[in-house]
Image (cartoon, rainbow, N blue to C red; front, top):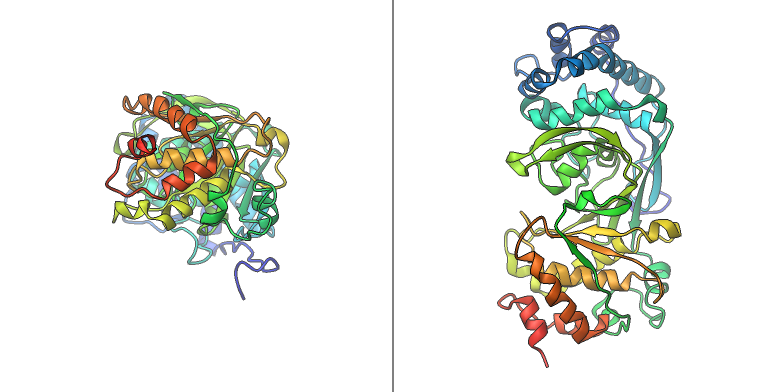
Length: 433
């Protein structure tokens, strides 16, 4: 049976506890100190020889009050919630095709508690691996601090609030008939369709702050095709950081398999639990009060051009990235108007390890954003974060000149199709007669 068949359902598979695991979780229901808790946690995770350096280091660097709260309150709660979820094993559908699934904050806390104890099952080969916090507890103390802070600070008064994950795929009736009203004959987002698009190019703002600092907005996650990337492993760049400081997003890692070329995911209503400094190996945890910043996370996976960067200048590659960005910026047909009008906070999408060309990605996002306006008078905003890159701060002038020169989506797209990897993208577009 085709996984993408709309009638096909794959249900979440829960771990079956052994008698020993039941006993260990039951032991953790009563408050214990660090030295009596650690062996139980390690055995649950199947680790009797390797020390949990990440967890031990993180615990040792917590202040006294936080250590007490973790061992006296959070850890027993995590054990209790883990037993509750596995005893109930509620029917949950995996999000392998278009659709929406919802979780309460309590349910997510339960799943993440199971991840902490190493008691989650891998669902399918098309899902990311690992699906536990085992690797992080062994060797990632700064990431571990973020999760400990989440387990300690999660507010029981908010446990019934709903978090939504929506998987969106290409839909002719929506993505073509709604946004390309004069091209009803087209059935795919092809080169001809984009060339004939007469929508006006829209400006967007450049700011120095990080993407996730834009409150009341849609935050673009520079994603791997496996949602969350290496968040449960050693990765610690934009996507992994976004999921680590907002751990509730990890529920999408557990329930979404690899994204197709014309699919995106949106996660709504997760809470920011901590701050951070640094990036990659320099990342480290900063404490903050948890806060709901009214941010939707748009999981927009970039293509990996790391093995051969010139590939991204081929027409089929530009078309792939443009279609992906457009589907993401268009949200879904069921999106409320207030969601649709939230500013989109983006930046150097796919321009790190995936070796995307920043100027090319700016133009692709400009075209996609301009096309995603439903009406001419609709007030949408796109905010491009420069990450304090001095060069990027001067890009706005060139982008504005390109908008003035080409005016329409179709004219800019036609010219973009003529580019090659030897050319400076902005210079090429501005030099054409």
